[in-house]
Image (cartoon, rainbow, N blue to C red; front, side):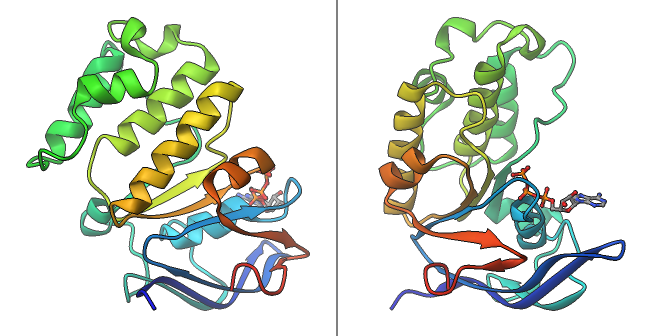
Length: 218
Ligand SMILES: Nc1ncnc2c1ncn2[C@@H]1O[C@H](COP(=O)(O)OP(=O)(O)OP(=O)(O)O)[C@@H](O)[C@H]1O
């Protein structure tokens, strides 16, 4: 069996006095796509933030690549995240944002898609010279995904990657995620889109009452 990339044991997170996560267990192995569904406010983003080292658990264990996740440069070399819309650099175009990420992560192997190819895959070629503030919501989400996918990583953390995306592009995104895992990457996503779960073949579970439904995501 392939290596566990992520191991979560009895994870509890409280926000103020409110318990949000109440004993989450999750194991994710290399090359898997795991999806976490569940109603608004059940703690999906909180779980992803714990996996990213952006939130400290109240109790329990979280390991990513064999160690507690740390919000530092070494960790983010291996992990790419798409969550809330990032702050874009004023004056930089769509293409320049993608180039900036690409250049930062050089050297990138020839097998990895280049900037032009990634813009094409994300349907942004026509808007490559625009600045992000002039894009539509879905186009800006495509740009967020392009910046995550244009650089090498071993783990993708996606919080509602379907945000603003049309049906056709959701299908294209599913294909890109499958390709990412075929190349050895691992994906964990929070999603409200059953179509994306089905199209990616993700192992999925529902987060409810602070716990993942038994079985599927363990
Ligand atoms: N900074 C915060 N301070 C206090 N409570 C918070 C904070 N952030 C989130 N919460 C609460 O934690 C709970 C879980 O929030 P979270 O964003 O993880 O849910 P979610 O499942 O991702 O929701 P959605 O589907 O709406 O994105 C919610 O009840 C929310 O109100």
